[in-house]
Amino acid sequence: MSRSSQKKLLAQAKKYEHVNRGRDERTHLLSGIVKCPVCGAGMYGNKSIKRKKDGTKYKDFYYYGCKHRTMTRGHKCDYKRQIREELLDDAVAEVIVKLVSNPRFADVMQQKINRKMDTSAIEQEITNYEKQIWQSYFVKAKIMEEVDFLDPEDRHYIQRKADLDNRLYRMYDKIEETENLLIEARAKKTAIEAEKITGDNIYKVLIYFDRLYKVMNDVEKR
Ligand SMILES: [Zn+2]
Image (cartoon, rainbow, N blue to C red):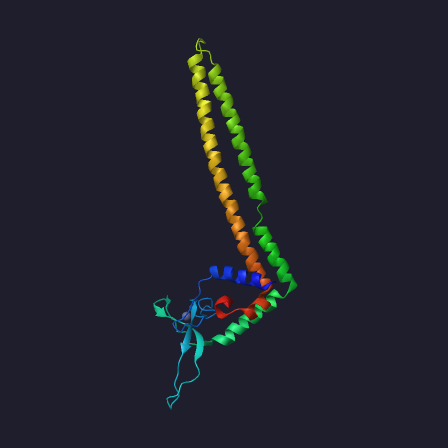
């Protein structure tokens, strides 16, 4: 993978992720992603600044903690443990590296993306609508031709004209209906294609995770 395509991928990945930064401007990689084991709320990155008895500072300590915001049956969450950020971040990265370096993982991911992103069904649908619309216009032209050839002297003229008019109106409705379906189907196809691009990029980031992770900064890692 070239450096420029690495950069492109990372820029795209960033667009899909709002980065959670603390007031300390440090990016907490798993902030909001880690869930509290007691209340299930997202745990957020914090910085702990402690002073020793002699007044000097301990080394800054970053941790994930539950903010106890979720009230369960009237009680606030009491999970007080502070989980060291580096330990958890490294453990999670290690698990992902192991997962993505398994050749089966690449296969399964690729299959999932391909299955979800298959556009052949929607393309068939679009073709069918286009064909239906073309046929409807043809029928409409035929009916109008029949109206033109009606003989006003015919003793059933009024009835025949009314019948043809009804058929004509039904054809207008049908064309409008099918055109709406066609617009919908085209929009759906565009959405699938856009998702496919995202899916492909997520896949690539995962496949190259090991290599990319080493060159990412904290914002990108998140
Ligand atoms: Zn909690």
